[in-house]
Length: 406
Image (cartoon, rainbow, N blue to C red; front, side, top):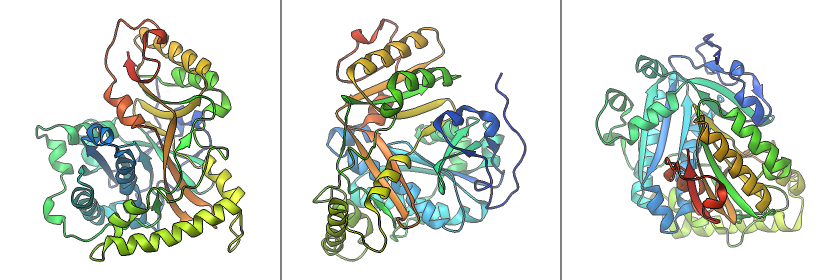
């Protein structure tokens, strides 16, 4: 039986900062290290509606950018405190303190308007108090996954994230959806603060064979994750490494950034400025020139360490770099576990992965990076999670693309 630590943390901005540090992905399965979120804190959810269609149109990078924009907007808003963040490929989950509730609602409304008017994407957004989720029968338990000092991600248990996400996605009205509703009247044409958000790296090419995007869902995912960890090996578990991190020119995300930040100024003017900045960054990263103490090797090594780990409630998402033998072994093991009824999973195979970055300070090593499998890894894996009792082994599955089983 799983035992949650139900002790209430102080109702203050320091809730997340005070949590025990989970140093490795393995630690995120120790629920004794999670704490109950204060009733007065808020949980925000965003989700790109129609993300599969957008990805099929070649807009994967845009979908990832808008998903990460929710994190950037709320992190910049809550700049004086630490908050839990979680990236999910086509959306995000973020928690904010009580005193940022109204401002967060406004920031999310502005982001929704930006996504619709600049990128032709419908972004679902919602914000609910933790106390409201508990009244609904869900809970919000939070862990602090901090792979390197000062760069923390949120991991969640208790059902609150899944409950709010499900409520937002349902077309039918519900009491929880009504509580989380953000009215269109808040869309005032102003821009959310997306300072630090960028995607200027090339696609991350697989070094071992292919990138395997997995979404695992079940009562106890530790067994499945242990199998993946063992079969992938330490190198395979990291999609971003110094060996496949390559700056891109022209930077792929410059036009995205320009459209997201131009406001009343011409997007072309902002793009020109961003191209100059991106060119300077490209030269420094390619040549290794030291500028104001910037150390290229250290920064690239930090990127490989500061990548996200997406775990909430009974779902785990990850992107790993596999050779063909590990790929087959992992999928065979997951099929075996799924046959026992304890696991439901989806996967997607691609030659590359995408990375979106949120950089607060390069000098202080404060930067985090969000990974998604190429060609819409998370979205495709999630969309294909279905029951398929006829699958006996991975050899019955496609050798490329996506599939799922339970």
